[in-house]
Image 1 (cartoon, rainbow, N blue to C red):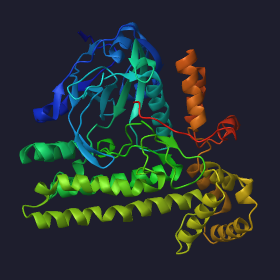
Image 2 (image 1 turned 120 degrees about the horizontal axis):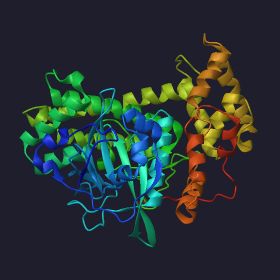
Image 3 (image 1 turned 90 degrees about the vertical axis):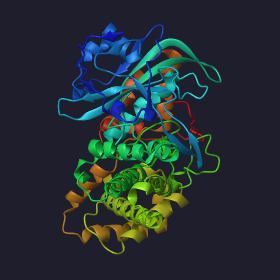
Image 4 (image 1 turned 60 degrees about the vertical axis):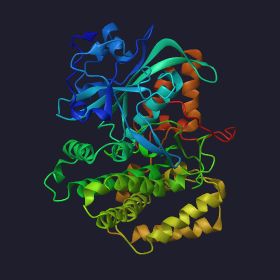
Length: 487
């Protein structure tokens, strides 16, 4: 049933204008007793939606998938992907795109329900999601947004009243996800592998119109689009590395064309600095370890380039050369962004040849002494003592002398340098034990106050306020942390 539009929905459905092989019209499966758990009122306002109406019984019915808002055209998207290096056919197995909300500012944002039941791409799954993983995505995606990292966002989580059967019986939920789009590297892989060149061209044309209008007049549109995707991903991955974020499952179907972070499954933030850090229970080989993320991003982008070969040039050898030329730029772009970000974390505005050694020297010591990544930079920012093993070592004393000399050589004042560090080094990140604490209280006890407090603290990560201090530490009792796919 379609509901009258009182919430402010302003849908268009441009994706449905693509070749039919790219999607299947799919209505969500109704749930028995929807209950709104959390609503992102600030995001709702940005989207032009009424929080009051969304919180009403009719609004919750829409967020649960029981009712279809006016103007929506629900569909599930087809795509493929390399999952841990193995190529397979995929698609929205538990997601339904309601449509594209046109905001008061004229932006086009996908509105997707995650966990609304089976789709033609469910591959034997139930199409449902559990409350814990949906709240986890809400926490992490909103924390990433506050950290200034491009990301899909979370509008709401609704408890369905229906059980979800996994290893145990869990409460079901539906997440409303907002994204610039859900176009993925895997979308292009699917069309390139199983569809026609004409359909591939239609997908490229659509993507350029939606995300890269500045290259519409380019002579080689596919090459120009590839170049822009590479630019955005190089910047995105550098931001992940700068805050210690580990995605956990960087399959090609989880890499967006828009340059947003998406699909928060077994993700987590690194506490102790170690490039080999892996949290995901299924990443037994460490393919998606923290230190590997830039390399995997380049690998994924090479798969996108392969998909575009028929459109890059009629001659295959020349097409391959064009693709290689573009992909080769990724590492340079990534390192430029990452070094600029690391300089900022150390209060450095300009560039000197020795900066790379200074940065790498600190990271080497942090790894050796198992120092906390976030808190080490926080201590340097406020000139306080951090991890004792690191800060009491003679090698750190020498490094600190070189760093202070380096900062002193630039034109900017010490106060300006400190301000840059405060703006570049978060006081808080979603500490793994805090996330689990919030999810445990919510799922097992029905207590959402822990979640609400955590979200409030994470909403201003660079504020460096006193009430954030309790969320900045990791108790010694916290053992090894492991995450699981469940979203």
